[in-house]
Image 1 (cartoon, rainbow, N blue to C red):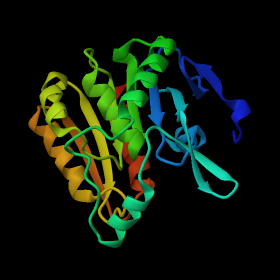
Image 2: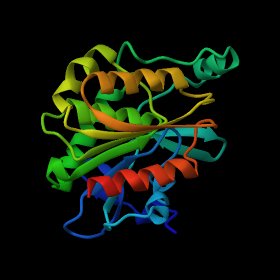
Image 3: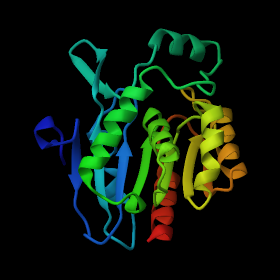
Image 4: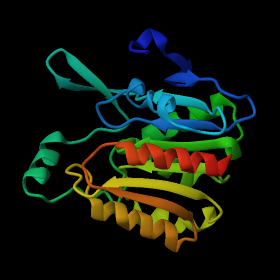
Length: 233
């Protein structure tokens, strides 16, 4: 099990963990959530059951964020933790749908440069992520002129709704996978369903897995990811 930054390699402006599979198989790029790291989603590739041996890239967030004394995590864009805690207390989930989260533009630029350095044709890339990593993966996928091979949205949220609504129909041949906990205390379930509706209304096909849980990746989602990746091979 990899567990320290010595295992990371530089790819453009970002550090990443890489897992090499079949050279002819697609590459899955998974962006972690707030306060996590490249190591957080790394174990996913070890538990999936897929027909192909996919290549994997796990980027390491460019921002360092304090978690507790002596501990820090990584992120793609800042989160106002006090505002988030207040929203959770009031059961009033945060909604980014009217704009980009602050700092998303910097994360987007770094991610595109990393993907350029990776050198994989866009139609052989499957972008995905968890939480704010899922927001970033969706944004990258919709903004890019070319169509990627796939998109996996794990406990993500709808952001910049007007722009995504304009861009999504151009990706109508793309098939997506989305999952969300019905009792997610961080990014509300209703917002995730709005994102699913936007994608489907734009002509995209996909699977949405709702599970009885919170902000997490439970076994049914792992099984769903396996099915989805097998459907793309």
